Image (cartoon, rainbow, N blue to C red; front, side, top):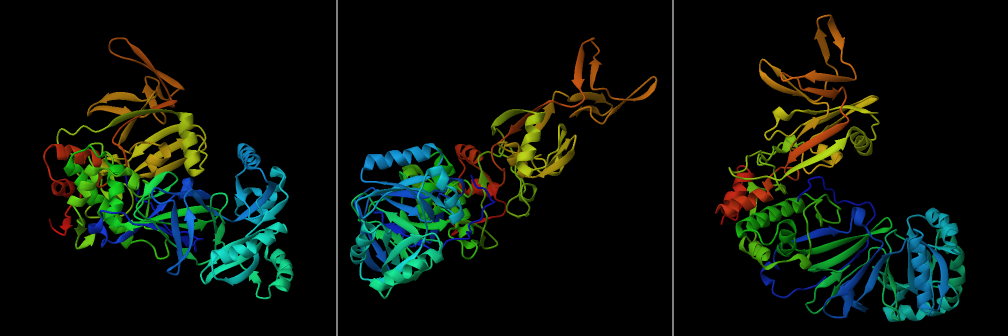
Length: 576
């Protein structure tokens, strides 16, 4: 499902580590444009990821087009940042137990094997030296490490750099080979500040006059390989790729085509999967729609997803790391691991076909289930797009229905969590503007409380109330249906009304009892304590309805007919 609220820029990314793998049998897609997919961002950000090639156990690292070294499978790419040295041991199991104990106490931690044959237990990484310093007492650490140090540049290879590292470790000074834009070097020190590194500079220069102070870019990464092999750092503006013999690269247990790159954002890694657009769609279509669905529905999804992706590629902000998220923040993407023959066939059958409006790729948003009717884009978000007009589903379509019951206290808490607006005890929740939209979705919802009010608008209603869709009605235990000259009307509550009797006008009491013609009585509270939300559909309801596309395909319609129904006035380019 597509979420139109996506932004791809980041403030702290200068290093990319690229691990490129070809894949046999996809020659037809090689000429297609490449798309950059952001993985492990936001709430799923990590400080380290595992690389595990499914084919060869080694892959070659390149810099500036030249092979630099081989990296074995099960290596880590890890952020560097600031970290605390907690303990050192020569026993692996002891080090692992220390890491586990720190993790159990809520402290980030990891193990590193030094060239001196000692296992260092680190807590971190932390974003700032102050954060690392504050964690010292929590972890019983003895020192804060950082990205500053003394640089000995001009090394011909990783092996040459590694040969200079061991004596420093034996002297108790951390040192690493580092791959820079201009080649290999050695970073001596790992200090938390420039001043600390400067204090060490003279001592190093006495032995190596060419040594200089290293100013970190804030984007340093570590490639940490299995025990026994040399770890190394990746410095500012450095880029390298690893090529295999046709294997698929596995990242955190999920296989991907194309290449993977890594960039630092704070203390977290952002991972970008770059691959041809058509190959990307192989992993999107079965992630967005069951591969067992009708071929015309899968083809509709393929064209919609391709168009959506191309629109994002054309409108990505300059300097952004990637074009789309690998999740429903853009559209779901499961990589090579998600691919299925039927969905891949749908991608191939519609190869390179996109939807256009006045010659331009459209923003082909879609959702799971319209609930019976899609909606005009401006009634869900803000911009009125001529090709995103509300349409009814075909006769016979049966949307998903749902019922959610919330207490007044729960709703008031949701308002606070969403907006920070403390409205007090909820008195009324009023849907507004339903008559002004194509499908009957509210344009806003007013929450009136004892201490104030708050109004939420359009698709944000779904987020605040945590609903499947915004196509819903509300009844409460204070709702009253009255019979008037024009028929029945349901009042959400009796709050704010008055009663007129033989003795004049009186304010409504805390609760009201009503007696019907048969003598039956019902009691209604003045303010509701329980709200029942009954709705239809799933998602924002703009553009193609995936369930609706399947229903239309079952009626024998082609992908062109399906998409032309949901996207008003579009053309198919190229026309096939």
